Image 1: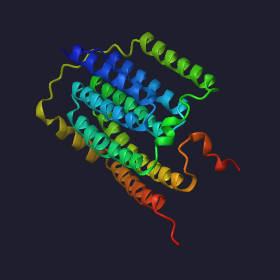
Image 2 (image 1 turned 120 degrees about the vertical axis):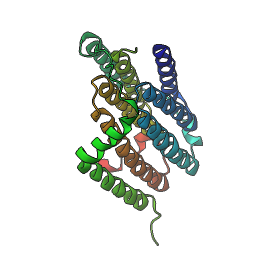
Image 3 (image 1 turned 180 degrees about the vertical axis):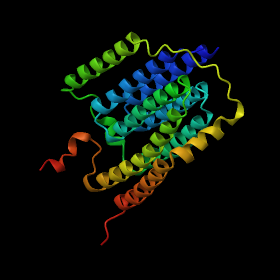
Image 4 (image 1 turned 30 degrees about the horizontal axis):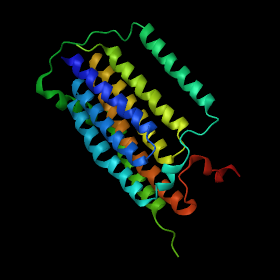
Length: 166
Length: 100
């Protein structure tokens, strides 16, 4: 049952990811990316990380993709639709990608570290409690650093996107 | 039960697709979206390893990755808006003003 669901979500996410890269229109890419994020959040649910699944939907689908669509709305993408799809001279990049993919596949399938069995511990309902205890006790400093980074990004984005004065 | 290497394989496939988008597409918007795809495939790996080795740190790293991604997208789209306002282009190849 789990395997069937995993295969379904994985196939859908791979197809939508291919659509992101291959679509000519950036709006289609953005919508396909949204679908891909939804599939990935379903995979997080399969991995018993419901908090991450919800964060994925809130942050990626709710915030980041809306930001992307707003920017697409602000700028003119009609010229981008017309431009040549895959310009020539990218054969080295293609070869590099194939090598990268083959290398990772060979290493993953060759090694036996990836064949661990799923742990059978049943944690019950306090998984999120333990997660947040770990996050706010052991990882408090990285958490604060992340909040400072977010604040800096907020200020930086406003300054960058502001119109020049005068 | 789903074996661990299925998740790793999904992460590999999504990573290669995202890298293809970053390297082969010339539209800045699509390059940024492919970057999101790369970070998401890494998140799948983090959470899968955290689940199968029974460790919370995978999920915590994934939370941090999501936070940094949000910051990165905000700054990148700010730069993109400023770029379109000044140069009115969306092609990666046309942005060579730092080359001197």
